[in-house]
Length: 293
Length: 293
Image 1 (spheres, rainbow over the protein chains, first blue to last red):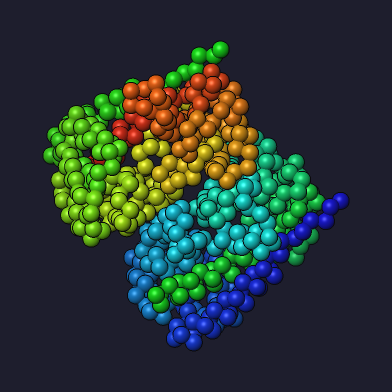
Image 2: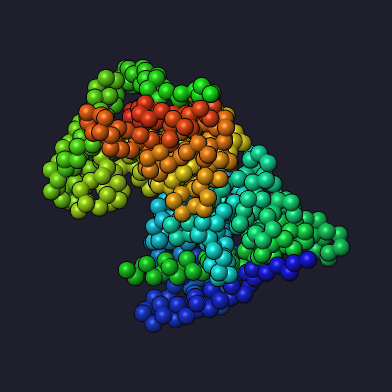
């Protein structure tokens, strides 16, 4: 039984945050305190947890943060006004509206209302285009940016590698594919999805396999080529009566059976998850830096 | 020896143009004469040929066209002013600046200056993003749109098919991959390129193989799975002393040896080429139609 290398998102994220801390100091010494606004509409408990840890991380780094909590019955126009006020606020360099908003909110219109120079989630069409065009002034969505950083820090060769991305969302799958196929990474990239024929065979081609579908433990041992690098973006709750909470967290990969085959794999939790917040901090600093130019 | 089906771009383009002719009449009856402006800077002979046939096709369909020829020493500011005047001109629904402009012109800035609602080439970041986001109000670049139309008219199943796109440009490769992986097409898509390892083996996986690299006859018989559909986007001039002109046109696919293996293949010329202008006309009508809303 092979002992695979764990791609430890916690320690890589900690190193990214250390770099951020140094850059915050540098920005402050040049007169700019980076600022992030996090807007939360309604009372989804998971969203409150995410927003809380984003704000807490800002505090740890010396980034100014503003948490704006709005009631679930906030109207589209009220939310648009909040975003526009933040666009105009010179103390705020990054704006994010926590997803998902309540059902009556048109999320796409809200994203488009964010000044693209403050769109640290990287979801505004302007930043989507910059990613496709390989323009480094754009903001890369935090989760795929975190996956790339994990690969980079682990020294995993992407040049000429066969990468397979399972999932075609604009949050993870498509941006991940664009990053891997870019002239910086030069992977051969396959985008597969729920409608792909023979997903196991497609995944078995991968030197680098990225699972981003949100189906617990879908990727089994016979989906993975021995020696592959596996990045598990999934964070799924599955019922587990043996736990006090009644559930456990699991990824899109059946870790126990897949890990022994891999040259490297991300655990869940502690893999991609911590990277997402770290890359959000990095994007906020990029926004602050670019606001000075 | 198998007799492959030829995907006849000339006849499909003619059918698209017939549809366009009918829509021009409908638009005129509602008071809108669709208008296309084609801007040409300098005296590249191939560009003059392309622009000429775009303008001629407009004439055949009853689309108003304006050809603006500017000297090679036109400045960036002068060209920007031309674009802005066209943006403001209500008789013009589509604007294209023929590529490539002279070397002193910053083409990206010019493309960004075009009103995205008039960007019938589909190169503006706003339309790049709409393609990635699968927003049908955007303009799809004409060449990949033409390839999709050829597949559609020929009744080729894209759902669950393995598609391989060789080439990662923003003009063909990336948009083609985004179209094939969209929820409308549902192909499993691999993007390969010059830095891919073992291109022949990657191409041999393809049910649908799209070659868009600009290397004459690169794709050989042993790169193609028997029964595959092959779309050849390349239009390369190769020296041929037996021709009066001294050259012949050839695609990225070694047609003579590949065709017998395929279930369907585009010839060069007469395959993808004629589709590009037809889809430009279709985009111009989409722009005119959307301007009425």
